[in-house]
Every structure is written in C-alpha cells, then in structure tokens.
Length: 173
Image (cartoon, rainbow, N blue to C red; front, top):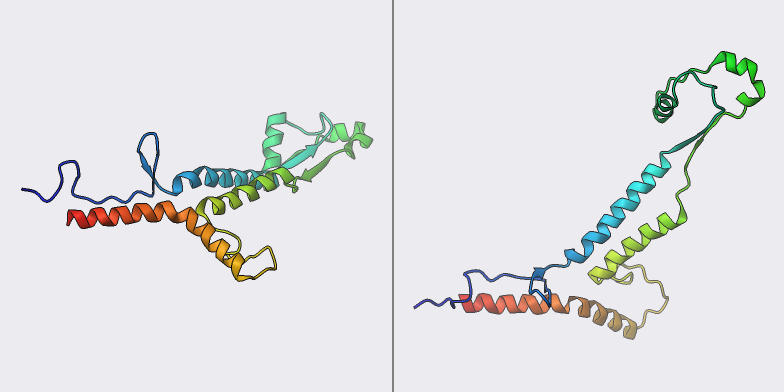
C-alpha cells in the first residue's frame, strides 16, 4: 500500500496559471516577456537613432568610393580626404558640405516605449498608487480599499493555485 495516489507523482508542483484549452501551466512572466522584448527593441532603436549622422555633400568632393566614405563618417577617428581640385573648381558647392548628428528620437518611438513599460506594471497588477506615485489628490479610505481589491483580484488566481499546491503537498505527506 502506497500513500501516493496512482495518478500523482511524488512532488507537489506550484503553477501560477493553467491554460484553459491545453491545461499547460505557465506563470506571470509569460505575459511579461513580449513586453520586455518590446522595451528592449525600443531602447535599442533609440540608442541607434541618437548615434546616427546625416552627411550632406556634393558629389565628387571627396577622394575614394562612396562606401568607404560612409564607413569613415561612421568612425570616431575618421580620416577623410577632400579632393583639392574639386574644391578649387567649385568653391560655392564646397559650402554645401555639412554633418548633422541626429539627436531627436521620434515621439511615437518614445510613446511606444513608455506604453510597454506601463503595460508591464498593468500585467503584474502594480498600480501607480502602489508605487507611491498617486495621480489623483484624493487620499480617502474608500479609494485605498478599491486599490487593494484591484490588486487582490489580479493575484487571486495565483493565491488559489498556491493553496491548491499546499493542500496537495499535505495530502502527499
């Protein structure tokens, strides 16, 4: 006679959530991973955009191929040779040459990054009030109770599965 039921194994697993259709267990992180990927992508795009240069130049002003020139402009220690004959022949056109550093991040990129950051808090059930950043000036007890109920409803499924795992562990022991 074994105290362990036939359909069970000798461990009491804890699953955060269980998919309804497949019964596959998963945790809170499942819904956070795509949001974190979005944050990483937006932050990388912002860094890349802020490190870009725009070069405006007349054709033939520099010695060398265009690809080589592009590589040189991208380097911090660029060595760019200007064609002196071209400059003598076209003195007005030489004044058209300029290098612009791109420092402005598009507003929609910034907004999507902020939205993804806020979505991670929403998925986890964390409100701004819980972080001490209340957006309203009301500090009533009713509002505080509403926040507690909201946070509790997000974690209710986790608590239910934790209690089930504890009961299962007690049954196995």
